[in-house]
Length: 357
Image (cartoon, rainbow, N blue to C red; front, side):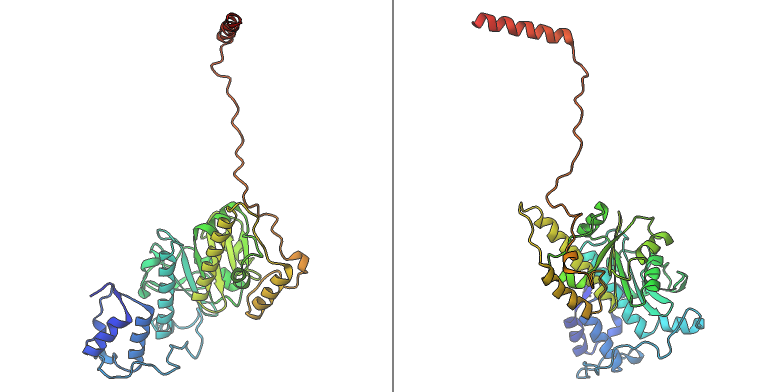
């Protein structure tokens, strides 16, 4: 059996009448393959361990997507209800989404080692999150954790991420925050290390979908770090964390929060490459930027520039493309200087010049 199972693989198994529950635990399913399995389960093809019958309907009804519980849970709900919710089809679908985003982060080298973390709001004071000490590229649904907004773990066998407090503080400060992603994309993190916000007025996608600010450095995982980030999420959906990385949030989904990261990283890379071409970069006019900000506002994405005058929109004072590192010149050392030897060299030089005349 292959490590990666595609939709075609499952369709072939389905036609042969094989038991879909026999898939190895370590197998990685593509998103379309996961949807196919969920569709079969919805239609009863996998009930009681029975194999899917050839010819059974594979397409689910339009409303077959797992739904949240009719009565929202909180951290104060009975423990059996919390456990049942944690293992429900609704939560399982969200766990799969987290795993999918984690693989994308790892494949794009936005995370290294065990770095990065992801969280999804699932209640007034509940969130699903990634575990600690596991590569984001190789997570499984059963690795996920459920925490309350104080950071206490309520469900899950793995220990929750050490940086969950930052995600929770963001969600508490920004009611629209339904999911957040933290990682270390190299080009965007370079701006964070330099303490420079990416310049604006250059690429439409960045202007419409991202609003960036920088939070000062504090030790990762501490309440202080979380507060500095949370203080910025009312008007920004992407925060550069000085000397650390980036965190983004979305009012739509965890995938959308990940999209913000892709957009930011591509933008930072493009800006840095453009600055090395030996010519001043072209920028949009304030009127052109106003048009993009209107689109942004209609999408419900925050930006501190809403309502500013056109002359105040493109302020890139901190951006200095093409400036090289200014390292102070080393002082010339006088060590080893011999005045007598220098005088002898001078006398010999004068004698040689006199004979040549």
